Length: 114
Length: 112
Image 1: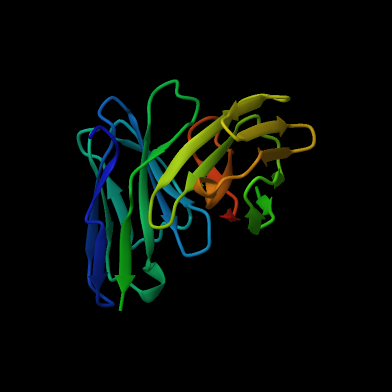
Image 2: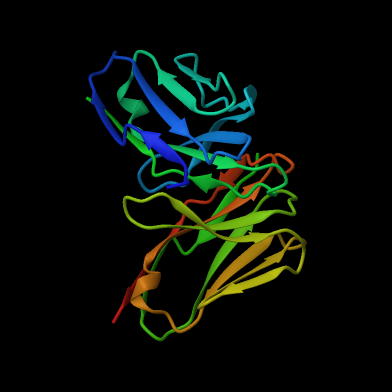
């Protein structure tokens, strides 16, 4: 399978705990994006990387959220001190150079905060 | 603030009928994308529209872009049940950086 893969697919946690999601993009893609989607809404942009550089962060990304892409390949998104409002589907997408912004999405990691 | 509005948000159609989904956006952009999402699944890219007057067709779906009116349409011809899904339009506000603003989606249900 050469698509975008995300892990875990589902995570249930208690409020206040930390969670981490991993994304492996399509191997030749140098751009990687994190989006968040809540029920009945379209995805909302969180942040994106070009290679290992984090080039933009949405104001939706509070201080409790941190994303890394240390070697320009896979990425992690960590949420510290989770809140119930963090419950959502976290989508990762990748895009290649010159691909005119067309994003290829993974299956997502669904977070439920109790 | 860039806004992307789709209508209708819910659409129930009978098989064989035609219908159009509309996507309006609030600022200038030459890049518009349509995605499909099946329940519990991720988003699948359908169309990339890059310029005013662009029209693309795939099977029973046809998408067009009018950048002057800030309007894109997704036309469904002779709907079949397999087209049941949620359809999102998205506008690139970051100068092709992939920072897309999505509409709320149109949930399409095609009934026999």
